[in-house]
Amino acid sequence: MSFDDKKHIRGQVLALKSFKKSRQLNCFSDCSTTVSLAFRRCGANMTLAKQTLELWRGTMKEVGGKFGTGVLSYFKFLKWLLMFNIFSFLVNFGFITIPQLIYHPTPDIPAGVSFKGLEILTGAGYFSHTVMYYGGYSNKTQGTGGRSEYNMQLAYFFTVAAYMVLCGAALIYSMASSFRKKYVLADSGLGGAWQLLCSWDFSVTNEKAVRQRKNNLRIQLKESLSEKVQVALLPLTERLKHYGVFLGTWLLSTGMALGCGASVYFLSSSGSLLEEAATLLLPFVVSLINLVVPLFYSLFKKIEHYSNPRMQVYAIIVRNVILKMSILGILCYYWMKDVANTFSCWESIVGQALYRLVIMDFLFIMLGSFFGEFLSNVIGTKCIQSLGVPEFDVARNVLDLIYAQTLAWIGIYFSPLLPVIQIIKFFILFYLKKVSLTQNCQPPRRAGRAAQMQTIFIAILFFPSFVGALSMVAYTVWTLPPSDKCGPFRGLNTTFSAIQIWMDDLNRVDAFQWTVWIYQHVIRSEIFYFLISLIILVFIYIFRQITQGRQLLITLLRQQIVNVSSGELSGLTCLVHQSCCVRSGCVYVMMLLKCWNNIFS
Image 1 (cartoon, rainbow, N blue to C red):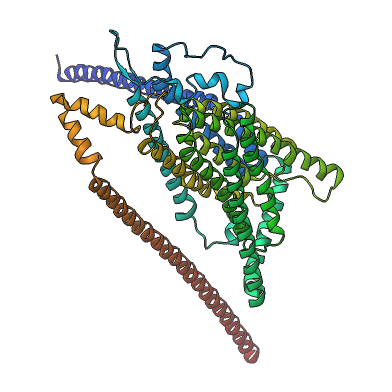
Image 2: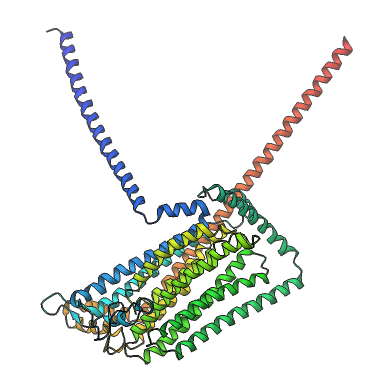
């Protein structure tokens, strides 16, 4: 065999090997591509399924497209609070109510007590002997007859405590995130340029809503310019006059809030809490005050002349918060001082009072939507057309939600199933407000400002709403003696005594000595909480310094961009000037040459 034949055979063998190798690589790449594509399709299908199953997604897009993000923020806030109550119901029902129903499926209802229908409004009667309230739960360790043991006292305490801690953590995170987006990263120095160039709401798709949004933007620009003119041109006497008006209106609004709180306290002290129909008087008066007095507060804007329209909105919000929280504070004081020392099963009495407040608040919100929005629309479009279509008041509606959620947080200890009522209430309220919005209202003139106040609403939800409810529950747990005849903590000095009894039981077991040591030397130690507070303050200071440093860096970078832009503009100006000079010089030389030719010709 010649050398050429051997070379030809070797080439064929190498070609065959190369073909097989490339074929294997192609198969591997095809398989990997197919698997990757399958995973991407699966992820896309899961995302689509998640969006399809998302609650009210289509309605949210419809509201945002017609009325903008300002009005949409109210419905997002309502949905967010609904998730809070769904989580609360699942936790309470899973760890408190289900164990009670397993070991005691039939409630201890006295003879002669039956469901009459009035309990839906009053929460008393038949409901007072069920697991709806604190008094319907046992204080015994369930399952001692051969089944697994379940300590109802510890389950009740830790379920309520864990829910409040998780709610507090969620609120702090949401408030910090919103504050970072709206205040830390936002540039307050851009002013009208930002409004003109970057504030368009691209979620608006309806043609009529687009025209309304353009008109609102024009009004906002006029207001922003007029604010600066008013601040600059307002004389000293006029400013003193305005300060006097502000002082008078604030004293009047604060006095009204305190007077309403005092009237609620005297009405609750003089009324009977045991007569089923008469129990509706107090929540009726409270809800009527919360409906009428804010309308009276809104009249103050006729005599108050704030240079900044946003300050006027903040003033209305603060006055409404003072009113609602003063009434709730008076009621909590009455429940803890008078009711706790008068009735044998006072926790269930307080739970019933909170149930009635939630129900009556819902009824008055429905009445407010009818009289405040529907009738205003009829009057503004049929009778007095100069009034026009009413605006959707985002601030007032959000404050109503905050008040309702405060009632739910206070009642989490006294009525574990109160979140069920809140869930039903928020579901109905969502569709009620959506129908009222689309049929009776127009977007607010300051929609952008309403959207920016989302941080303020979350802050109010945290303080004083959540902090006040947490203080009420903590005072009840650590200070007030539980009822002797009902509830899981009957016979104890305080609710927290259940933890001490549990620790005494663990102290007898050698394997849990470390738990007892942590409880005695860490949890009950004031130094531990002092150190925790000190560490939190240090972290707050560090993050504040980091935030200020980033803001300073952003300011310097923006100033550098301005300087570079100015330098480029000046350089371009010089270049144009030089080119003009060169061009004019060339023309001058050409004229000289032409004259020279004429002379010598």
